[in-house]
Length: 309
Image (cartoon, rainbow, N blue to C red; front, side, top):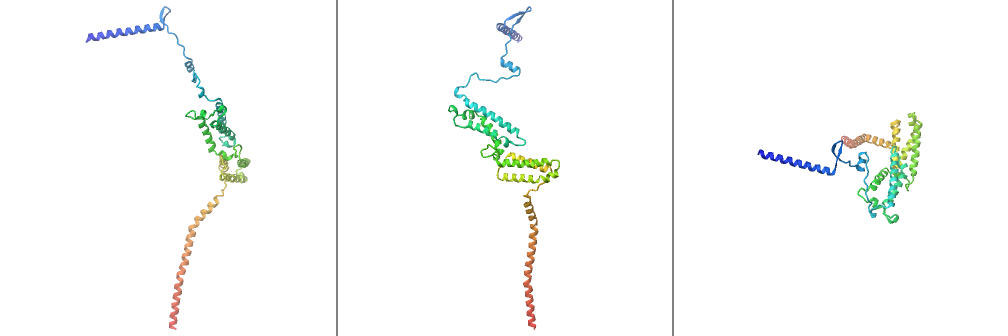
């Protein structure tokens, strides 16, 4: 057993030495030997890094690009590319307008032109009507991929415009503000000017600005009834009411509280009226029941007197 183990050890050492010799031969064939300072060294050439790797090592990233273009039948028409560029410019303009007039809210007054321009270019892109060269951009720009980016981008902004109710503050063609909106803004400016005049004297403000503030609320109520409100008007009235009640400490009884108080008083006195009427009715009925009895007793008494007489 000891001899076998020694033999196996010798064989393994010989095999390892042979493998090492083969690897040295391969290295020498690939990388030649060179003499340096009297020492034989293995020459390993420096492999240059690729430009992409060098750029990544410096912190730059290069986008991948196709080495060849798609077939002509899959390329986007130049007219469609131009529409796409115009859509991007108008999208950015309208989005910037929304952010600029987000607080206080004045998007309906100042952004309707940007929305109309965006809606116009989106209608041209999504239309099935052929354009120049008898080509429609609907399929290539709207349905070419699963994401449908243009549709989703426009839908989000259109949803904001619709939820704001801006169309209710614009004219029929959506090109200018409606007359009701202009008149409301003028009435609002009158109230705000009055507030500014008596800024240091709240008691005087509550007295002298009461009329203009009342007209503003009445106008708001009529516009709300006629469904002519947009987010600009709603936000302006809410801010004005906070100034009137919270900042200035003014009170303004609303007209609808009068009938509420009247009905409440009537309901409060209704049980008293009910019990009082029930009491009077019972007393009257009691008198009616007693009266015939007295009449009968008196008639009996008369009969008895007649008999004795």
